[in-house]
Length: 503
Ligand SMILES: Nc1nc2c(ncn2[C@@H]2O[C@@H]3COP(=O)(O)O[C@H]4[C@@H](O)[C@H](n5cnc6c(=O)[nH]c(N)nc65)O[C@@H]4COP(=O)(O)O[C@H]3[C@H]2O)c(=O)[nH]1
Image (tube, rainbow, N blue to C red; front, side, top):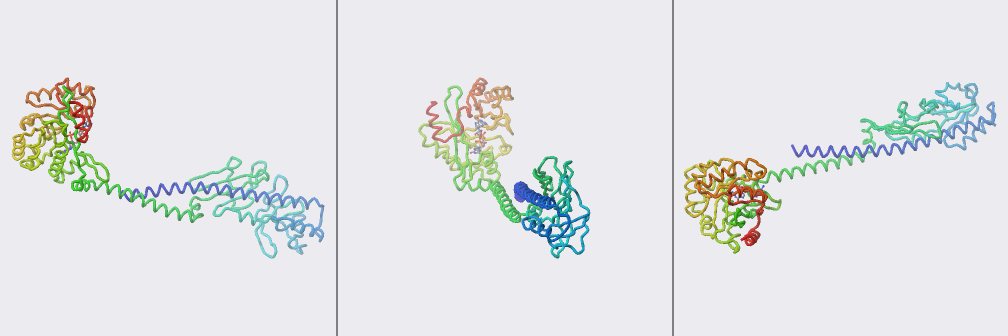
């Protein structure tokens, strides 16, 4: 579902961007085409008006062969006039196309008249060269001309509706050519307007009293450019499915964290780091806590991710043995670490509850090592069983120490700690982090210290990040501490170096 949604989202975003680009492109080409339309309209208007003015200036008052010859010569020299007519009293008497008319044609009254006296018939129906055509006519005095608008039609914007209007000195407009009603008269001299459905442009000429406008629907922008639509569809599909694929891979990778954690056991992904434990009085490093790390080809995972999974899938003991063995391999050869150096190793509650530790080869190897091994356990209901108690007895009888981890959180309480016969109490870092600003720890740590002393236990403060915190917990009677103030979890070689420096 996420894959489909993400693919669709990517497709929509992409489609919107492409549509926006296409609309901007359409707007630009609409303006260019409109300018070309206007320029052609200027040529038609100027040419037709000058033909009419020249003929009127020659003083003919009747239609004869001389006039027809003059009219035909004029027609011959024009590009944008198709026919010239001579008329009197609104009746066409002769035309360049048909000569002197046997039956003169009564001219309809004009649709509009310009400020300088030119009459217009924007869509006249007329017989021309034996055919009936619809063409604009303009006339003044004794002459009118049929305009050749084929260039205009060719220039007209495909799929766009467009209109050419005459604008008089009072800014009133009259339809002259194209699709009636398109022109809206934006208040500016020329302008553009994009609405939700259409793209509209208009421009007015400085030379002739005409304005041109064009309008295209957004949907037609794509229809107009079929190749753009195909491009949009293909690349959109590629992008949409690509994005879907990426989310699928991310999802798959996430889902397979458990697989990575399991595979990591076989592929040597786990290794231990060591965090120093410091004697606050002397400042020397008296031991370390073993903290597991995970790294495979996809990157690192942290204990908060893999420890609960390992516990859930029943791989706790296998993992504990692996870390113990690596710890021994790492530390045994480090001459810089003194005999009796304290090494704290974390156990899963199940390692004890199922008595895994008892008589295991790795437990015996640890017992035989030159280090003072302490097992860190978090108080847990499973430790109340007879099997667990038997295992704890075995642990103590074999010279190991027990430390209660994260004291003050979860199930831990002092009565149980006393019953288990723990040697060390590790105060959880949540009591330390705000101890210098009078947090909960400021009140509770002295209490924990005094009870631990009564029970004959050592106290380690976890998560000491600053020297101020170290001084405060030390003043509260805490003897040992662990935290970034003394070093982050580090490789054995670095630990050995630090021990040498501080001893
Ligand atoms: N904010 C802060 N954090 C500090 C500071 N100093 C140390 N820490 C972090 O606090 C955690 C202390 O270990 P933990 O309480 O035993 O808590 C451990 C432990 O319960 C468990 N764990 C780690 N390694 C093992 C292992 O090998 N076996 C088992 N069973 N559990 C392990 O995972 C927990 C988390 O381990 P990490 O992520 O390594 O986190 C470590 C350590 O990196 C500090 O000054 N400030």
